[in-house]
Amino acid sequence: MKKILFCGGGSAGHVMPNIALCHDLKGKYITEYAGTDGIERGICLREGIRFYPFDGVKLVRGKVLINLTVPLRLLKAYRQAKNIIKISAPDAVFCKGGYASLPPALAAKRAGIPVFTHESDLSAGLANKIISGLSVKTFTSFPETAEKFKNGMYSGSPIRTEVLNCSKENAKLLCNPDGRKTILVFGGGSGASAINKTLREIIPPLCKNYNILHICGKGNVVKSNISGYKQYEFIADMGAAYAAADCAVARSGSNSAFELIANKIPTLFIPLENKASRGDQLQNANYFKNKGLCRVLRQKDLTKESLLKEIYATVNDEKLRLTLEKSRIYSGNEIIIRELERTVGR
Image 1 (tube, rainbow, N blue to C red):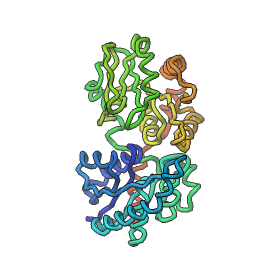
Image 2 (image 1 turned 180 degrees about the vertical axis):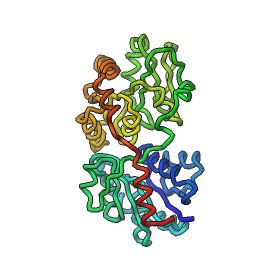
Image 3 (image 1 turned 45 degrees about the vertical axis):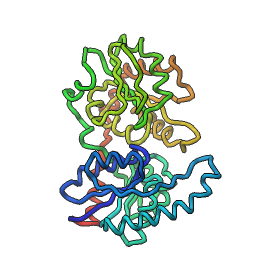
Image 4 (image 1 turned 60 degrees about the horizontal axis):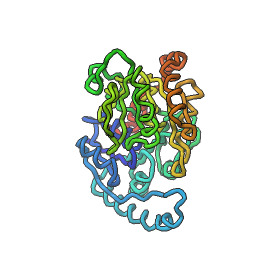
């Protein structure tokens, strides 16, 4: 059986699309994973996917002295990745972008193994700009992004089948339905402190009208006896969380954004904007806003008053709901797997 080695890590947005493809390739290919000692290791352990660790090398924005050591650390990571390629002996390497994809991509190219990559965001990250030059194909979540690469191909975002069209029965395990609408709030794999803090300031008035399902991140659950307010550090079954949601408040990382829109959930996006970000979340959010598929609240405008106002507006936005119902946002799994098979075979 042919083998595909996946890589990408540091955040759930880089890992879960790979896992979506691994699920669909099960029984057809052997799938393995190369990554850092980050979120990807735990996810692969849970999924039963063989995992090869190496030292990640991340360019830290605004930290000149730290970045001076990048070349030496990258050389070390490349040598580790070269050894992984030798042990795994894959027929192709699939990269999800980010700093955890670059060393395996370089090592695979040097070994003559076909490399594929996928760019989730509207604008390409630095690592994927480099990896694209090594790749057979550069898949993209947005059609406009594919035009920026010589080997670009619009596929859509890889989405786990289990997060689409999940039944309401599964959702009952997360929150007790009482006839009120449920608002799902989450800030990515590790939560979002700004969203958590501001949301909790308006929980009492919100819960007079709605149930709140809050995924707040590890170590961020607080004591509360407010009826209708349910907190979780993490929810593995996001399909159930989406099925429970009549509305959502979330960051606008590409993976979460596509899952929410594919599930046709009216969403208020609060993009991550700080010095550590290259602005990709704001670009993603504005892209969907311009197509009438979401509402956007800038973090610089985030207050308890603005959040409460925008949540009510999102819940009651019938135009948004109708636009979502007519939208055609699908999983990119099928196109990506078809192209892999063309190169690798079965």
